[in-house]
Image 1 (tube, rainbow, N blue to C red):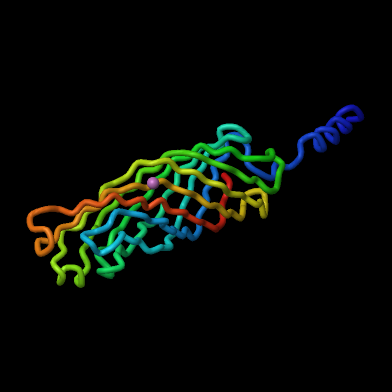
Image 2: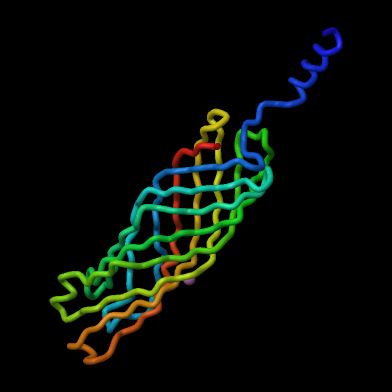
Length: 214
Ligand code: NI
């Protein structure tokens, strides 16, 4: 016992309490995700550029720590819903989208840091669906609005603040390069043809919430 006790005391001080993420941890974060499109597009049949409003939904991220500093993350969310308009027409259509995104992440600090800022880069697939022409635009002859899905790069910065060994506060911001081609018909303006416009949606997504480390 005389020999073991000093060893136990030494061991207790040598292995500090792990405050933050380390290799093998699974981090689940949830919160409010606000999508703010930075839209620019071609002119739509002389009515102006397409504009897309912002929207807030529930965001969920799942990260796995490969080492104490490197992780991979998947972003999921409840479907975002946006109104698409032009200056000349008002609301043209409503669309929904889901933006699953896979990121490689680097976390600054170490396994004992209470605050872990991070940066990430990865790839996004945006699935645009449930496009509907607004009744107002329908009455002006517009029909059949469609927007293509998009593959693009994504970048993020964020930080976790450990409240306990397992619960964290999280704030993060992400930029996604979303480029889509929108098409719409108007037989009164251009009979028999589909108007095509290239649209850079390129949103910033802000998310704040809580996380749990398993
Ligand atoms: Ni773009």
